[in-house]
Amino acid sequence: MTNVSSSTIRILVDADACPVKDEIYKVAWRHEVPVTIVANSHFRIPVHPLISRVVVSDGFDAADDWIAEQADAKSVVITADILLADRCVKAGATVLANTGKPFTTSSIGGAIATRAIMADLRAGGDIIGGPAPFSKTDRSSFLSALDAALVRLKRN
Image 1 (spheres, rainbow, N blue to C red):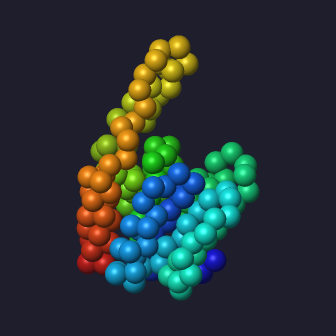
Image 2 (cartoon, rainbow, N blue to C red):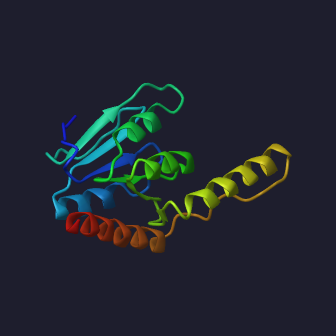
């Protein structure tokens, strides 16, 4: 694992179900920003000095806990997990969904409420659809959002 000081901009990735890892690497290389891939299983990452991997235990929320503990104002966190996003936003991190949608202090409450409503509907036996399939537009939006987030952090 690369040991990165807290004053360095870095990208923390909730990697187990992340469909945009290759895009993250490309943007990180261009900006020369370190990336930490966090998962509860060992999988291949590029051999590159800016890319590191943290394999956590398979305990419930172990990857989320590790990421939330590391997140700060110099971090860009990539996750689709709304509760992890909430923890990271509260820590001052810039948080992006895999589609490029930002989680912010003003949007996270609504996302958590929607998540709770959907969970209640599923628990009640209601048949509801899942998220739309990941698209080229999502990938493009993500690339733009990550690039913009890094530019913004570098300016500050």
